[in-house]
Length: 475
Image: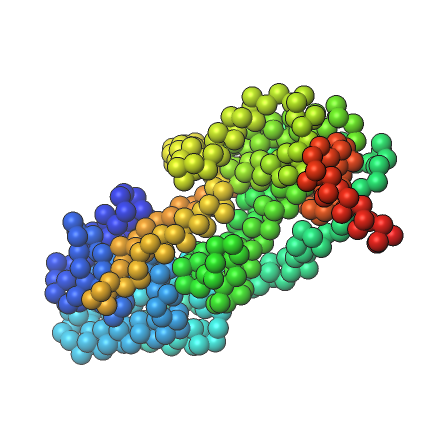
């Protein structure tokens, strides 16, 4: 069926493009502003979701409502309500004129189209038995509209098969990732003694900043590909705090968020580890400059998350305190990077760069130009604050749909960016190092840092003394 491109124009501007003239009168209470739906009761919004003989909802609305509805109603309950409306409309057509009866097949096709979009965009809504039961019930009713040639039945069968495959693939991915799910601290506390000259470091695996930035982009896109819209919506419905992504809802829906957030921390600690464990100042300086170049290449690619992780790693205290090393570093390029990630004015410089990358992506002719990987932590906070600033319901009890238009727009942008296929050649050796190389704990980083450049003030001397005492007690 003809579809309006999702978010093809200004936020919500096409939301009423396919609404029939009498839609407002029929629903009763939806409120529009400049032609855009901004609020309504849950019942009215559900009614607007369900197709009729002469109406099909805009795809923008379908995505936004299905995404936000879980804040107010469980997916299986929503399916039940959709099913009830479908049955009522089907009965009206069956008992109507011959012309209306002839439109049953058209009505059935629209309902199938809605279910198809729902199962493809939010497959995890159908993970429980109740939702699957409601889906089968609606499907059974709709197949009765076309019992002669069985076309509807075949389409529904294919849709169900695709849904089960999507659920199975996601389940398998989580099982695989669970085996490797370890916080940074559990990767081993490596207390530094003078390392051997033959010890492998990142430069022995990859000495080209561009190649390393490309491999980091591979890893980013692989991890972000397993984040779904409903995962991000957990931030709105069940977030406990900004400091951790622990939700009171379905833990399986927050695992991918936590796993991706942990990757950022791992990369930051890996950068710090690679720098701090180098014994000679000249080589340590080279390592710092190498990571600066890698971060710059990440910026040029549009991989802002890796760029921020690298900068964060170099700004950790054990690295930042290495003044003798930094005095030899050509910091002009690093200063430019820090300017882009300056937190003042709500990361204004970064947001300008992100907007530029997003615009480049929209007009790109190649996947290289389409890459946009935002700083995930900032993206999460944007959604969280958008949720906190605006209420879910207005004083009259209606749902504040204007709020959910904006949240869904940001989430849809993220979903669009994550679907870009990485255009760079994959190097398994480099990726293996990035994902499995030992990472120092915070304690080990300070020990390595103090051994490279001794403490310079009373505070550092006290810290170094405490660390050495801890080492002796362990021995």
